[in-house]
Length: 265
Image (cartoon, rainbow, N blue to C red; front, top):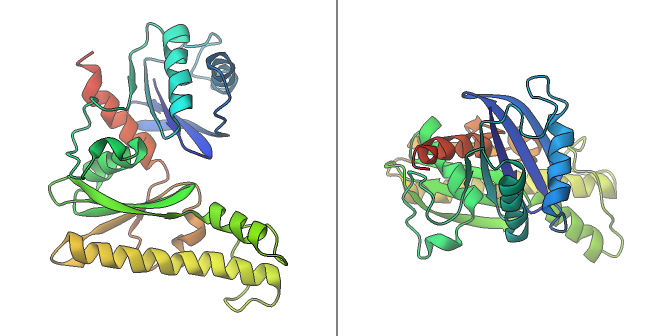
């Protein structure tokens, strides 16, 4: 089976693939202070619970694919693959790795690996033109052309960042649970903040996507809009532009990139 690891700024998502099917997944906090040995223990604990894997670390794992937006974690995961999975083919997404998606930006090396991986999966599953909206620490919008090229995107503060900023900077405000309020017009401070987050972000999504779609295609209706990321379900029901929800888009992209590179190793 293939182990895929997507390291984000806040959370790390792991997926276990049996062929093209994701059979297990885990979400843990990202901690840049964890060493390779600590990460290995964590992986052993998680995967030891799965019935298709053996008791020893690495049993049942035929390949590993990793992307990370946190360089220090990528360094430690590289050490994990070397020390604990030495006989297992591993693909770490970084410059020089074959993705199959041309990157048409001013400086391709500065584009986050997760954004490229999302573009890979979007082009493969849905074709282009497409826009991927990833609800993570930041909310990112990434554009894929009709030819399957990554042409650029938009980066905005994420939902959790915005909630935290309100709680820190607002003298009479506090941190709240991100949840849908009873109505748009809040009857108390918490509901007013929840309404601003949920409906404010839905409006942001619709506005940005509509503008991107007009630049991306002659007919904006030809653009497929895909939502992913841990907080996507909070906005799905309120946005009018999202066509598809694929929570494992990045993990699927990692599987595709692994398959495109493993034969070259």
